[in-house]
Image 1: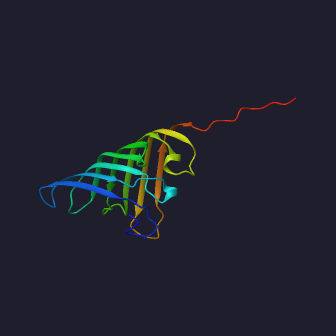
Image 2: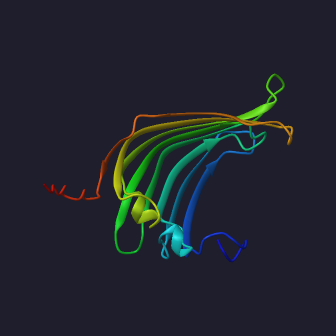
Length: 167
């Protein structure tokens, strides 16, 4: 990705997309698989994503809704996994009655270790559901409205120092 735009992380992406459709005005499905041979931590200028898989569906013309089922994002680097994110995604284009697009993500985080994604992050493990809803207006100067709902559970991997008492 860094080769396309300065400031983006370095990657070595390899992917496959299988598209099934009966025409532009008919429902279409796409199965996407992307691997990153150069996965690594953000603080090293790399993208901490090892693999992305998703099944997308929508009608190409006019594209008014896009659904992502079976979304799976495997995090980590070339040596070790740093967690798994699974879930669904939904995008809906602005319509005559609404002047904004809507995006909804319903995700399940499994054994995410932030310090393995970026060394500056805390040493912990996170798991649990995460829901994000975003409304993006068509007018560029308008504010976005978003809602985040999470019930993440975490455990700290840091050892606490043993208290020392002096008398």
